[in-house]
Image (cartoon, rainbow, N blue to C red; front, side):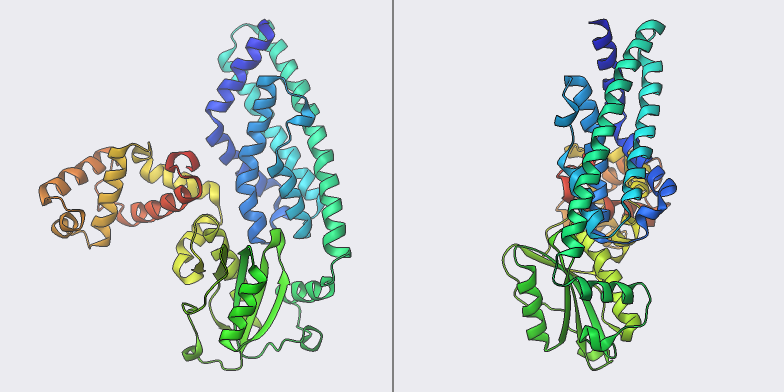
Length: 398
């Protein structure tokens, strides 16, 4: 009974520091397993942000409730294995990621045990129990990930009818000269790349191609997305279209790069569409343009750093309280309206004195004047709102 209590004390201590631990694991993975991130696939990148907290919580939940290791593997981890297979990331990189995360988690258990279990004998017994479960869980997870990866890789690359076209397009994106005849798609002209997902991504793509009267090239992407390029013969920006007139199928979304010329533009627009997709997945817009979310896309390429940036800039206002929300709304409006307190008051339907009081409260919470770090605070608010859209809670994701 004492050992079980010791285990629960350690689990509780680790869980209390879980947000910081998630960020630390993400940073270590990027540093120690760079080969996993060579393929800049937008869906895979988005999935990782979900997988790490789910996997760490699964270990803690399994320990706390003495679950069989076979019942403690989160579906998010299996999904990431499938996406890694679709993105053609090495299975060895996938396994190395798991081992690095395992080592980081074990360090967290050791540190927590040292803090919360004072009796040496009980601490040793609790750590032995944790070690047995932790290593058994990881052995089971690695085997499950490899099985999931290999099955998905076989289906995705060996049994799909578009595997040759996929290889040709991937080669072009990687920098190889295009085989235009084999692709059936000329590289001269002006290109727009799009990522589509939802209930009917292929229908959305065909609708856009028809309305733009553009040459279409498309392949299936990871996680049931659809990658597409639209080509126009002109290189003039006057032919660019914002797609506002396109009617998308229900529950279907698209993320767009920017129009760009020739083979370089083909590649660049695709990268931009992928970055826009990462941002779009956190919200519910039907159409997301890279130009509208380029700042968010840049910051979110390193999610742990983005979360830490928001915590550093807005930490005192991230408690989710009604008061903090009012203060964030006020400082956001104040910046948007050119730091004009009178205009801010009119916009928020409060008097100028109330605005001044709120701004003083913001400064007190953040430890800075509202003009000293204007740019940093404004960016942090944008990123915080984006992360909140994904979770419904500003403090939960940050």
